[in-house]
Length: 211
Image 1 (cartoon, rainbow, N blue to C red):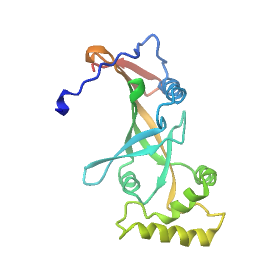
Image 2 (cartoon, helix red, strand yellow):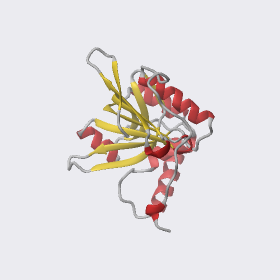
Image 3 (cartoon, rainbow, N blue to C red):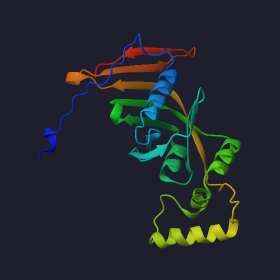
């Protein structure tokens, strides 16, 4: 089969200015909850894009762990590639793709670390294996084999038992959006696409973009 011949007609829903929220956070909250209720696989998964000092972009999948008027939160290893890139260039982009609902949300903005208190609270809510894993994995570094991870997990498991503290190299980031885009697939490739841009007075300008 020729991959160029793959086609899909998008016909599940529409996105109009009159039926969408003036506040992009409310629109996001509505769509995320619809994805959760619709049992979309991993509705909390999002692509995170960062740019390094060499100007080469990189992407990976992370999981949203919170959102409010302050921004979108996820947690990771500060020493990972994304952590290093954010340290040098604190701008990023996020994307949610809910295939079954024929929807995409794109979010751009500035990134900062969450407070130690927030990181501590979330870390303690994680399963024990995940807390040990945060110590065991030197994320993004070259390792000889999987045996390194297994040995590290055994080492830190024995050291911390049931109470591993949050590693100093692990914690949360918050992206403060200044640009949102909501995309709803439509028939004949005439998709709906609304962009929200932050204004100096704190309001949002909503515009329709050509698909």
